[in-house]
Image 1 (cartoon, rainbow, N blue to C red):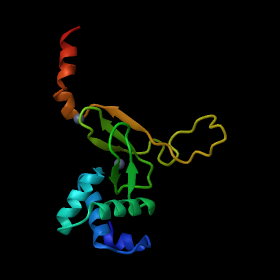
Image 2: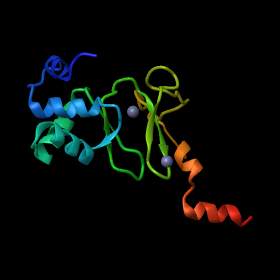
Image 3: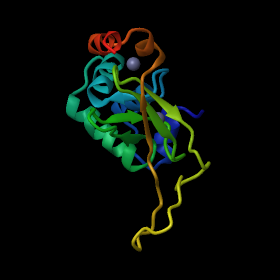
Length: 150
Ligand SMILES: [Zn+2]
Ligand SMILES: [Zn+2]
């Protein structure tokens, strides 16, 4: 993969230390980050960075398609560097862990309904909800109690 700096430049953006740091964070091993997490990790890379600069960098990266913003119901928005492939997400109801699921159809829009009331649909975002392996092994307390009483 090209460096963040190269990609920011080829997207036609001004290259700044903040934008490079933010994109590097999104490209790190953990793939979905809340904005406040990006701010902390980018701060570690840069020494000092204002939260506003990080939020500005995130919105510019999303606008140019270098990053994607997703917002699973009931949680904070998440940012990721994997964009443009219409992939979906699997979210743990208990701990919020989020993983990628490839586009079911291979390209957007994923599903084709019969009638969209005249709308031209170009994207379908699907969220799969369930329990991650860790949370299946250690169910939250109230679920344990439900399990005991039949
Ligand atoms: Zn979980
Ligand atoms: Zn993703």
